Each structure stands twice: as C-alpha cells, then as structure tokens.
Image (cartoon, helix red, strand yellow):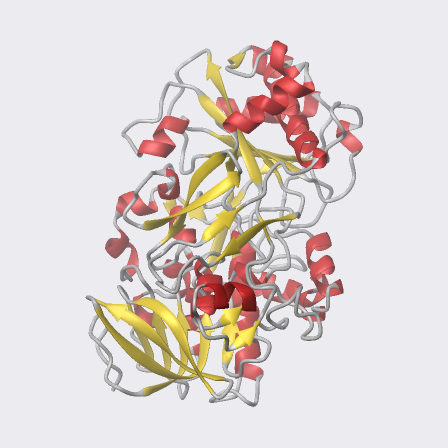
Length: 542
C-alpha cells in the first residue's frame, strides 16, 4: 500500500518520482498514474490541497492575482536583477498547481512560429502540426467546443471574457479606431490584433492545473502518492543514472528511490537542482565545490522572459465590479520602430502585448476588498523571444539563492520595442473612444513620450517582468552541449533516468505567456514516458 499523503514514505522504490506538483508536474502525475501498474510519487515544497475547499476562496478568486501580492504564503520569492540597477523579486507558485494557482488565469497558446522555431532547433516533435493534437486534448474550450483547432474533453476548462465592462468596450473601440484588426480567438493562430483573453478562470474561479488534473479522485488513485512540504535538495546519480531524489522535511533529509526522476520544479528551481546535483557548467560547479557529474554548459547559461511596464489611467466614473475575472481585452501587435504606421498590417506573430486589467493595481498587489474606483492599469510587455538572461549557482548550500540576471534593455531593439508599446498604449487612451471614459494616461506625459531618451529613462525606472521565464535547461540535440541540456522529450543528456518537464526546456520564451505551453509540456513528456520501452510500465492505453 502507498503511504498516506502527508507522512514520510517508507523506504521503497517508485517507478517515477516527479519533483514539483506545479503546472506541468500536476499533468505528469495525473497522466503517468493512469497506468495502474506504474507507481508514481509527486513531491512538492508547498502544500497539496484537496479540491477547491482546500485552496480556499481567496486563492481561487478570479479578481485577484496572488502572485502579485508580496510575500503571499502560496509563493516563494526569488531575488533577481532585471538590469544592473534594477533589483526585483520574482514570485513563483509554491502550492499544488504551482504558478497556475497564483497567476492571472491567462491561457494563451504559443504561436505557430514559436513551435516551428523550436522544431527547427533539433526538436521535431514540437512542430505546430505535431503538438496541435495535444493542445486540443488538454482543453475543454467552452466557447468553441470540439473542432479542428479546439477540444471539449480535456481537463483545462477555457473561456474568453466578454467586453461588457465599460473599460473593456472602450479598449476594443480604441483599438478599432487605430486600425488594429479583430483577434477573437487568440488560440487559433490568426493574425494578431485585439480580442478577449482565453482564460482558465471559469465563473469567477481560477481552475488551476492542480484542480484540473489532480482532483481528489485522482489523488486517491492507489498507485499515486502525493507528498507536500517536501523540499527537493538534489538528484542522486549513481554510475551515470539517476536513482532517486534527496528531499528535506521538518529539518530531516532522506532519499526517495526512483526508476525515473522528472524535475518539474519550474524554470528557476529546476536548473538549481541540476547544478546542486553536479549537472551544469563545469567551471561554475567547481567554483563552489560541487563534484561534476555531467558538464552541461547550457544549464542556466541563457534564458528568456518578457520585460514589462505598467501604464495607469483614471476613469471618469466609478464603475461596477467586473464579472468573474480581472482580465479585460488584449492587443497583440508588431512593433514599428516608434510610429503607429501600419497598425493594422504589421504581420508576424506580434511582438508586443498590451493587456488590460479591470481592477486597480493596488487591488492586485494587496488583495484588499473592493475593486471599484481608482486608476486602472495596462500591462505592456515586449514578447519577442530573446535569450538575454543568465543564472549561476553561488554556493553548494541549497538555501543560498542563485545569481539571476535577466539582462533586460541590453540592446537598442529592446528599448525601441518597449517605446512602441508605451506610445501605442498612450495613443489608445487619448483616442476618441477612451476620451469619454478616461482622463488619459497618468504618465508618462508628452514631454517624455515625444523624446526617445526621456522615454527610455522612464522605462528603466518603471521596468518589471511578466514572470514568463523559459530556457534555463533548453532542449536540443546532444551534439550541441552549449545550446542544449535535454532532448525534445526532456531526457537530460548524459544522465540516464532523468528528465526535465517544465518551461526550463523551451529554447526561448514564446510570443505569449507560457501557462498553456507549460500544461502542454506536461502532456508531451508524459506521453513520451508512457511510450518509452525503457521506462517502467511502458504502455499507453489511450
């Protein structure tokens, strides 16, 4: 019999140990345990609630973003530098469902161009045509139902908001006035434009990956053990093969034996675990005294994220609370080098995102009561895939944070793209459709907007991040060790029995937020494990 959840496991060998019950880890635990003869253990540093009641209403409220609240108990904070002079704290979910439990519920697929770029980098299983069946299978699209592009039977329920809030209607009309096209289904790969946000917030409740894939009836499978409050410290590797994981609970460390170990701890924790296990750049490991198991220079050597700034504006009236979600409309567009020329025909996947919030930033940050009144924000992000970041291990002590440098604004292209996003947002707010409902942007003013140097300085002073980290353990061919640490199915090059399954493996960030892609990663790698004859219980009845 498997040990009861919440107790220390007896000394035994699991077929698969999944480290992390976050967005992708929840998928893996659910799919792998569908094979009744495969013994699966999933461990997480945070709690593993059972069903909605275990999470509580505040954590699932679609009008809140727990990850935006400093020191939220369902998150862990990672100190980083966005630029050499811009320190930041990046939160990550530390609870069942991971960051899908604390994010905004945005669930937009990566673009076809992203999938095909990853496939061309030596990962053919990630072409758009190859992943589309998985994208359909993971979703229950409540707007479009079953069809060539969408599914209606998957665990993730998806719905798009309606522009029935005055601010959302004004955004839609302003985008049309400036010549941007409609983009009613941002998951169908049509040309980018203005449209509603596909979301896993349903009837005001955030349906995170944990609720969707690991409800109580799945957690109760006899071949699935789920243990919370266990912090992984390193992977045990013997003779070139992963044989287990060392975890810590209540100050005590013990090993969990495994036939296969899958790291799904997130794009910041997973590379740290690899380095603590002796898998990473040789010079970095030797510098801190960690014995080198596998010289893997691609681990942490480059990663992607999306730089972001927030523009607030003041409504003329006090409106009712939005229904269901904080998300308003969303505009994707292609940067044009500082002008609005060609707004309706920029082409490409869209390298700028202007995302609307229907509740004040102060409400998102504090989680306080009431959303009516106060300035409303636009979140402006540069979403072109650029590997500007680097992380390095600083100590063999696992409690010492990594050195994480995002490398934002390191090129003229980065600065130009964000200038475009800020200027387009200001133009939207100053357009006739917004004039009747808004006092215009609260900043920056014309004296800043009209001058590149001044606007660059404003951006540097207001810079944040969309928290979309990808590529810290990139996938690719084994003969390119400086660019790839795992293969297209997450198998760590040179270490048998060890895989990675989270956004770490994406070669770079997609042109959209990666929440939907993280679920996809779990599906793709779970299927690969089930179909791999070298894995325990190699069968896939689906």
